[in-house]
Length: 225
Image (tube, rainbow, N blue to C red; front, side):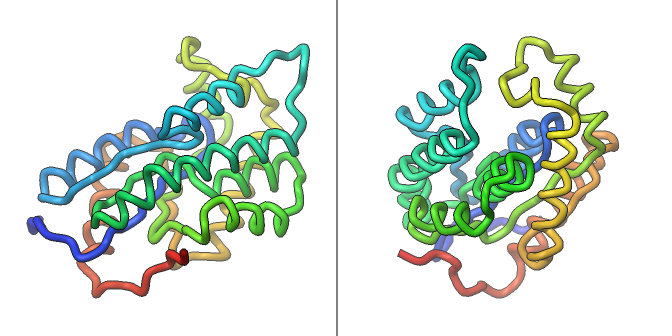
């Protein structure tokens, strides 16, 4: 693997997938690989990343059942958190030439609030464009596996379950179908990895995809201010 110590512009890489797909494990590995190769790396997550966005995350994932969060409220909270995240963390890092690795981004909004909650996809895309100032990932890695396997993993980790984990299996099947539909629309950006196999195999393929992708000639920026 080559080493690169100087970057001319930042790159924005996101990891997506249903609950229990192993994104956190894989993004930690990828951050170590890229850092070892000499890249400046910022690792972050959504919802979250800044103090305000993390506070919104807490509301989203721990809301009381006595006051159910409507799909519209859920989406607007996600966009509020994302606006803070992009403005105060992601864009400055990209302008500094860093590689930004983000656990979830706009594809999750389309999959969860769009395909699963039933909100209008065009409205979600337009509102996301306002919240992000037109920022889109350069590369997205979709960790895909059967819903039953992902939920079983989450159930085994009872201390980490949140409001979305407790949604029905039907809901999570809609999320998965949403992700796969989005990947079919943008195969150049979204790469699907089989996440229903040993973690080392996934790490090896993920590393190969990212390093190979970064070795290609620079691509026109997808960022619009």
